[in-house]
Length: 92
Image 1 (cartoon, rainbow, N blue to C red):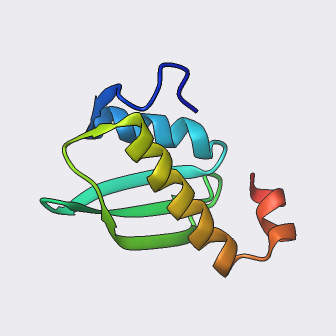
Image 2 (cartoon, rainbow, N blue to C red; image 1 turned 90 degrees about the vertical axis):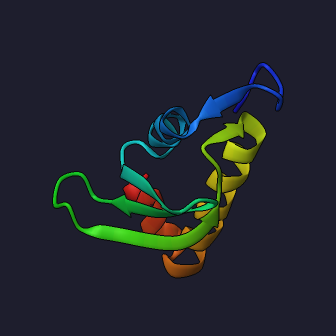
């Protein structure tokens, strides 16, 4: 994901943009629900229907791209545990 290494830092809004690009064509929203955690929602862009929402994901206002990659992996792991792999391929 990161050609510059894991030490590049991004702000929370920029981290969210990286995650939006990663999960496209699904919709992606994230908000900080506490100083060190966030809520993520993946949704179908056409219908607006939520595919998965996850609360309590560790984050900060400034993260390394490696931390962003860990968040992406955590969301993908959760998604795979709730959505059968065949269905996920249709969404992705």
